[in-house]
Each structure stands twice: as structure tokens, then as C-alpha cells.
Image (tube, rainbow, N blue to C red):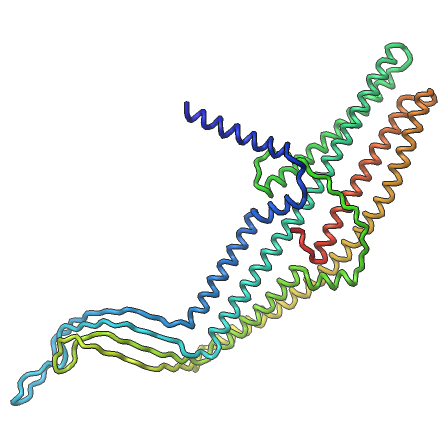
Length: 433
């Protein structure tokens, strides 16, 4: 009984949370983008990569610190070598039981740039991880923006269709009354019913498309399927001017793709430098101190002792490993340069294309604004003529349908302009989040 009650409570609050989300104030694009870039798994994965880079930096720095170890050993030797001195007796050369306990320290004094090169590489790897997170956030913001405006168009288009269907139903009621009095025909009734069916079919398509876009948004936000959104009507009306040359120049300095490509180029060069230093010599200080037995005159007494030494090593031959590694690293540098060049070309194309789309969508808004005004004027005239009996009910329906379709076209043009406006911002490297 308690288990069923718990399930009921969970289901109640789950449904309530969805309803609360649906009934809340209209949701803005900014708030959606903020939620997505804060909680999406790929962003968190990128942040973990940054954390991993911090650990790699600390690992590279550790070579500046000494290695310290506590060592202990016991060794049993046999037979024990002995020597007999006439008049002095028998002497053991070493004890049978050997004990040794020591603290060993190994300090890298100088490695001719190998550690510093590893550290530089680790630091730049972290910068690349940061740039990757920024790129992920920008891409998620762009997806969210597209989804938001697709849903906004469908949300508004559904309302326009509902108004159109209501008007058609009012007309149907009117012509049915006229048919009952003999002042109308079955043709007018059937023609009106066909228009209603067509409008309802279009509304169904719009609702299906809205559900698909809503599912995408729920996935981005990790919300329950079926969550309803009341989107804020954010239509961009800025009449912006575009300059391809200026925009391309800005984009080549600010776009994440360019910065990432250049960062990869830098990392490839640092990796080449590191490999080139692998054959450099090493100078190490080795210290060891502790207690062990085996010292004359009392071989079994534990005696304090120490060892201090400088160790210098210089590689003479590594079977061409460094040479081949350098050749591989050089190809990576070349590939990174090509990647940078490709990014520049793609960005140039994106800026030009986005500016063209922006101009085109702005021109369409002007055209459809004029069309809506003309359709509204035609509808007003049709209503006057219908009341005076100059036109039929179907003629009036044509005028109302033309007006509704003009409103949809204007809405689509406004939504396209808003999308192209944000795409143009993304193209020149401005952040949406």
C-alpha cells in the first residue's frame, strides 16, 4: 500500500512539474540557451577534459621535484668467506645476515629543456580543451536557436490556423442557415467543408512538426517527453548592414574553428620541439642515506652510511627512433596548417552565405508586409461587398484565406530573418550564450 502511494506521489509531482513548466511565463531564447550550455553532457565532458589537462600540467611539473623512496632489504649469504691471520685469528669478510635500510633521493638537476617542453605542451593542451568547450557551447546554442525559432513559427502558425478554422466554421454555420431558407446551395456548404478539412489537415501537419521540434528541445534540456513550452515571441527587427570584407576579417580572428586550428598547429610544433630534445643529456643528483651492517670491525652492527653521486647520461644511438618521430611530427605540423587553411576558406564562405541570406530574408519581410496590407485591404473590400450581396460566401472565403496565408508567409519571413540574424552573428564569431 505504501509502495503504491509512493508511485502515486511521484507521478503526481512529475505531471505537476510538466504542467507548471507549461503554465509558466513565456520561455525566452536566452534562458533556453543558458540551460542547454550549462547542463548538456558534451559540455560537462569537455570540462572534464580541462580538469584532465590540469592533472597533466601537474604531472609535467613533477619532474622538477625529487623522487624519494624508502628502501629496506635483508640478504642471507652463505658460505661466508673467512680469512685467517696468523697470530690474530679468524676473520669474516662479511656477515651472513645483511640488513640495509635507506632513504634514496633522485633529483633531476638539468635535462636541457625536456621538462620545460613537456610543460609547455601540457599547458597548450589545456588551452585547446578550453577552446573545444567554447565550440561545443556555440554549436549547442546554434541548435537551440534553430529549434526555438522552428517551434516559435509552428506555435504561431497553429494559432493562425485555429483562427482560420474558427472563421471557416462560422461561415459553415452561416451557409447552412442560408441553405435551410433556400438562399444558398449545397455547393457552398460542401466547398466550405472542404476548406475546413484542408485547414485542419494543415494544422495537423503543423502540430506534428511542433511535436518533433519539442522532442528535440526536451532532449537538449533533458526534460520529460511531453513537456509543453510557451515560447516568447522574439522576432528580430534590427535593420543591420553587412560588409563582407569587414565581417570576414572579424570572423578570421574570432571564430572557434580558426582558434582551434591555430592551437593545434602550435601544439604540433611544441610536440616536434619536445621530440627533438629527447636525445639531450640528463644530469641527475643521487643521494642515499640509512643504516646497514657489514662494516669492520663489527660486521653485525648497524652503521649509519650515505652515498652521494652525480649522474650524467648522453644518448649516443636510439636506432633512429627520434629521427622517425620527428618526421611524423612534421607531417602533423603540415596537416595542422592545412586544417587552418581549410577553416579560413569555410568561414569565408559561411560569412558570405549568411550575409546573402540575411539580405534576402529582410527583402522578403518588406515584400510580405506589403502583401499582408494588400490582402487585408482586399478582405475589407470583400466583407463590404459580401454584405451588399455583390459577392458570394466563397469569394469572401477566398479573401480571408489569402489574408491568413499572407500572415503565415510574413511570419515565416520574420522567423527566417531572426534565424539568419543569429547565424550571421555566429558566422563572425559572436557568442550566442
